[in-house]
Image (cartoon, rainbow, N blue to C red; front, side):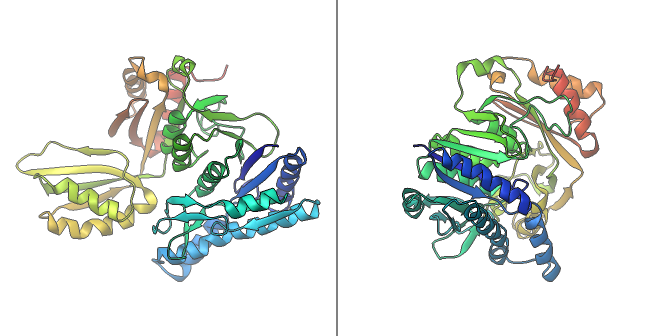
Length: 405
């Protein structure tokens, strides 16, 4: 007997008929003698609908109340999925994140998992039941509902797989696996059969929508091997695993585009020790994730800081920086949203030279200007104009020989 965690995203449970199909798939897995934990997201579009309602009644809703509201989406799905399984003769029980023992820190809307007490889930599994768990949510030490951020159901599934010592974790989505680029942007993108945790993490954090970055990070830390596959067919997907030597033969594994970034420029600040520290401390205290950072060389005692944040955090970033500017002796904050981040990723970059040169030349030949540049051991990211992002992705995909023949 194997213990399997299966996660189904919003499109997989998008309506009643899709939920019935998910139930059929879960039934098949259980009928093979497996213990099954199912993690589900809210139905596609529900979270955005709830967000819209919140902002219709309050321009700046509190994060605690947003968590109370958004948790409703997954709770609808777990109940409907359990009912669909009951109708097909499968004994199933639905659990909220709190009931499943998912304990988080106090940060609302972007909470981090602290620990999981999976004893209640394991008790139901041993009793022969399929356990349906609401993804994306948990409970903090004060007993308040918290949510794990966009894509948080991925994290719920990976964390539960670790907690119940699952033999297998399957992430079901609306695509066949992880591709060398978004097939909707790059028509010649091809599916990757296996990919390392580090490559998957870099692709996810660079704009690939297949997996939430924190879930990949958690999987690597706890050694959870998982497979990304489609809920609409039975094809094999992409296995995400620890790096093995042959992976370095492929220089660039994939290309990602992130159109959800905004560039913030903090200009005319005093060029003195501590200024940057105070700026980024304020952002950290506001729970804002900063990505690319560039500071120019100070002139005449004045410097500029440029960095990127998720577009949804721009207003919060501006508000958090207002008191800091007074504290550091003045300055100005400007936001530019018409940007995109283009990234190339591959563990092979560690042992091959010339990747940056090829990337920059390819973009230059197409007259695509580069605004910001950051690098890591296995990734190069550039900020470019938003309206050239898709074109740039196709150009770079071809340059590095990733096009399907």
